[in-house]
Image 1 (cartoon, helix red, strand yellow):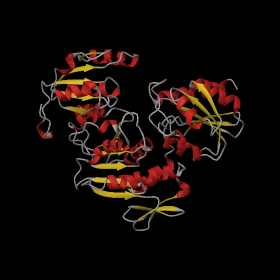
Image 2 (spheres, one colour):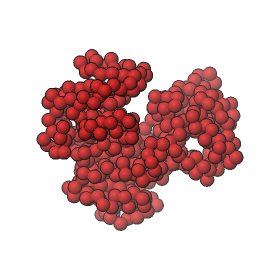
Image 3 (cartoon, helix red, strand yellow):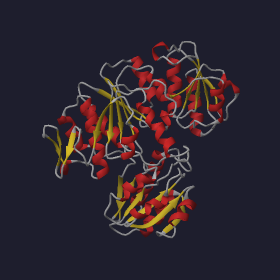
Length: 459
């Protein structure tokens, strides 16, 4: 099947194999059927989630297999893969040797929408920024919908819009590096790049390989599109240099070529009109201020009024699982930062508090440098480790900080409850993936919230 020209792609009666039955896999299978394809799905797992997805797709008349891949997957004109399938997987290499084109769910869904796409990526802050932008764009002239790596799957949103079109639609997508590995035509109107720090090094060969995947997000943009980027990130500024899109920087340090400038008391525009006073901003923290500037810049390019942008800055209080205060028990504050799945996110979390911290750290190691946390642990009373990475954490931090192996999140919360004093912060900021013990970071954060609720009920 020739997919080199987007305008000539016709899915009628084409055979499409969907690999992976996570949220995006189910969504893209339904979309592919909707646009006329014969769909076959396949997943190597037989987990509860996969079995549920299997039953759901069978009700839609879509056939497939779970608990392993058979040769049926190669009877295809096109493959669409879930982001959880690594590009070096054996089945991927086999499909490529058979000249089967392979695309991501994000790529496939983008073929069937003409609405502008505002895509957000970065190593940290994507989810918070995506929600900020969604709130800023909710106006009478723009009907945004949030999808991608957060909330609904992009393919679901596109399929719904095929049924009920919305001429005011704007897609706001949180994008991960995984979703950009198999891109052909995907082209945002606005690409927003927040930062680049080491992440997912258990999946990529090195940092350059990881960054290259993210850079695919601007690869199809032209001078009619915009690339908004954090000019304070030197690596990012260097890597986006070849992009053809119109580049618009934002910065906490520089006022050169930015749409919104910053001083000690306010954010203001090129005409020196005040956008917002710093003490009016709802979310504290230097990292959030950078996210706000990126959001404001992108929203402004979409024509959002400064009054709407500042209103959201005053009222937006963050998202679940990102420095989320889930309660106070006997004077101890419990913070759910389950979204912190890499080491740099943990550093941001540690620098966000002025109180003694009991840090719950660990999960499935993504290749992060745990030792780099040490300079940020001046307020950490104790590190409580969980999950598969406990031994790796103990090896590099065991002699540097007080550290206790807890195994499970439940055990860590119990130990924290026993050891914390009034005024302390118990911080779940794992710095690792969740898949050793949980379905995803949301599941991990929800369990933490429930455990804290249990402490409140029995205190």
